Image 1 (spheres, rainbow, N blue to C red):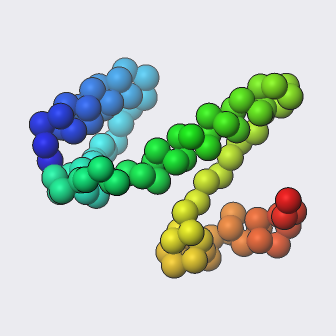
Image 2 (cartoon, rainbow, N blue to C red):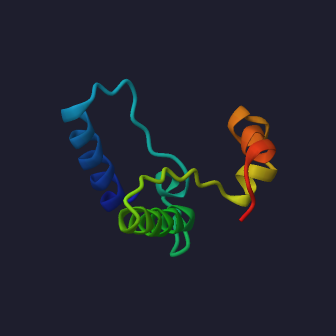
Length: 96
């Protein structure tokens, strides 16, 4: 892990520890391995953009929208595809 990523993770842990009792705190993936590139954590960036837009639309319409955001991999190839929430969305969700 590069020093900058370590410092960011350390700061996050310290802030979280002030408001909740952490049992464990770990960094994993390309940031932990130290081989992150310009495209690493792209999903996180896209999820942040989506959450911001969702918040704006909800705010403008005086409604709270709680998004569940999954990648194609999570839905099609990971164990998440068999979870009750995904099953429920597939069975009851209304396609727009």
